[in-house]
Image 1 (cartoon, helix red, strand yellow):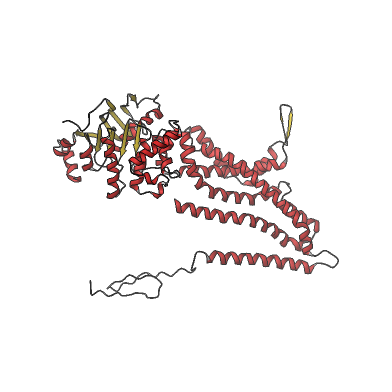
Image 2 (spheres, chains in turn cyan, orange):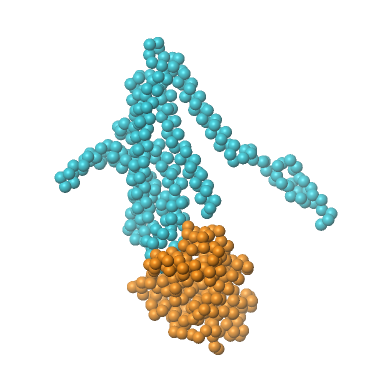
Amino acid sequence: MSDSRPVHILQGCGVTCATTDLPVLKPFRAPPIAPSGLAAPVVIGGAALTCVALLFGASLAHAQLGAATGRDGALAILLRWAPLIFQGFLFNILISFLAMALGTVVGVVAGIAQVSLAAPVRKSAWALTQFFRNAPWLVLLFYAMFLLPFEFRVLGLTIAFPAWVKAIIGLALPVAANVSEIVRGGITSIPSGQWESAESLAFSRRQTMWMIILPQAVKRMIPPWMNLYAILTMATTLISVVGIQDGLSITRGALIAESRPDLMIPMYLLLLMMFFAYCYPIARATLALERRFSVRA
Amino acid sequence: MAGRHQLGDPVVVVRGVEKSFGPLTVLKDVGLTVRRGETVCIIGPSGSGKSTLLRCINALVPISKGSITVAGREVNDPALDKLALRRDVGIVFQQYNLFPHKTVLQNVMMAPIHVLKQDKAPVEERARRLLERVGLSAKLAAWPGELSGGQQQRVAIARSLAMNPKVMLFDEVTAALDPETKKEVLVTIQDLAADSMTCILVTHEMGFAREVADHVYFTDGGVIVEHGSPEALFGTPREERTKAFLDKVL
């Protein structure tokens, strides 16, 4: 084909055009707007942070300037309450840790039960999982708070059952159901050839599960599990509804004590930023892990 | 006709086996005998139940009717100790199915250590020797994902051999490989057969079957149409179906 000469159609469209003798009209494909994968998130993230900072500064300035003479400045009030709000926030984190730990232990057992060979075990685990996964968290929390006794009597011993422990159980219920689904999904995502080859090497079912299937599945479970943890952390503020002193109830209490409605925006924003600073890195790490695992698989 | 091997007692005896998945019958009155040291090839068109038959022999798939005995152990028995049976039967799959989270050496060592409860040191020594035998001494610390298909398949063979099985089953082990890597795997199997390992191969490699087999079975539609020595089956097939199949593939 010595006489073939390349004809570029739609030059400048940014698409590599094939060479051809025929006058073909190729479909128009616009080049991507963002030049790289990095720029867009950085720009958007930076813009969002700037907006929050502006809102925080503006609302604070407004409150500062609008204050009547002889009263404390807005910034002074905010700084006075900040340590207490932060303590409340730390309590939220503590609750999230314990609820996640309890929910994970129960959820892993339930998830493994969901792939059990025994039909009654498998079906009841499935039913429990579906029930708690599709129930509103606040309703479950109410049940835990008001149905569990405030103390247990075992062999003459009285074990106190304080509200925060009940709150942990209430939050752990939906967490366990979600972990159960994550575990079941992770296990079933492992190709059946792995089961087959382990079985043919005379591994028992339990050995196959613990030595061959779960080690591979855990990698796939970690990103959704971290995602669930971030959601739980934010949901811990629900416990303020049932009367536990957490970050949210302290913030609300502070606003009432100061009776300064103009401080509402900066004060709640302070709490929001604490949660954001904690949850956003988790979200980023989840994404990074997901990407790394998907490349390897 | 005399086989390539001095044959011993029957190791695998299949009698009147039927297997159906729901309304679909994939094996009908299948019978075959494999003696110690013998190499048996099963050929036939896709979907003729060859792979199912192999999976029935190590009880991965239960049979509906008939009898299979492996080293005197009845497979079609509700009280069968499946794990004991599988310790005697090695199987290699088309898709290798290595454990991706373990290195090559660990893949080979896992079953003897955890299933046979053998000591680590002798198992490791044996695993090294087996991997040397399949030509992979340089890949002991590699991960399965880093190996070519042929190398993975040879690891899978070594992994099965590490259990010291009485019989090895090969389920279309070269079907997913390209021609070059196919050869390394076939040579490995040929070595095994020459070493008097009892082997049952399901294969589409007719030339290979003709070369290594002591006995060849041709299956179609879940029945054994014809069997005999490779010379007889490939040279002078009696049945029309066998002829038609061989005409197509050779």
